[in-house]
Length: 173
Image 1 (cartoon, one colour):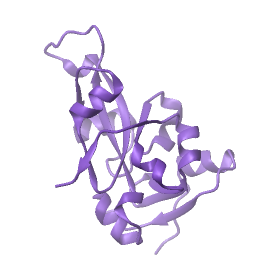
Image 2 (image 1 turned 45 degrees about the vertical axis):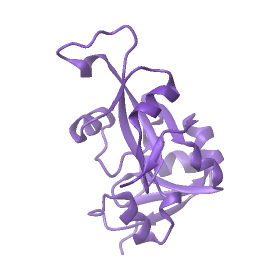
Image 3 (image 1 turned 135 degrees about the vertical axis):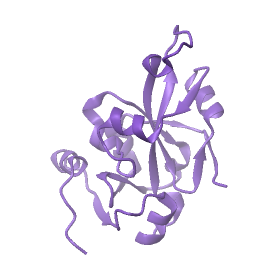
């Protein structure tokens, strides 16, 4: 396998002297459960990052709901799905919805399958992480590019991204 590129997320971690390990896999794999299998880690320790749109408070639903939506990043275990109603309740809003692939890529500047809170630190996204992450010393998250995951301590990830732990996931299926 070729050497992993140096991504923005890796540069941030290195600059802050946060230890991490790089795991590469074929960039054609975009399902987080398949990523976990490819790199030999349990799906509960491999986290995917989703872009969710929260309706801005005080904004009425109109013909252009995207214009009144605030983008959020939500990190979940590979084997879980986001329960949008539970997530909306957990963050104290009435409504939240998944961004489309095109919206996610436009909002983040990253390709779906490579979206990473670590690569978006200066973009002022509010970041959430499923509370199951707190059960692990380390987890793997996207390195900001398809085919690259980074393994780091959960405490370091939360401190760096300002992620808030929430309970809003359901088993996939």
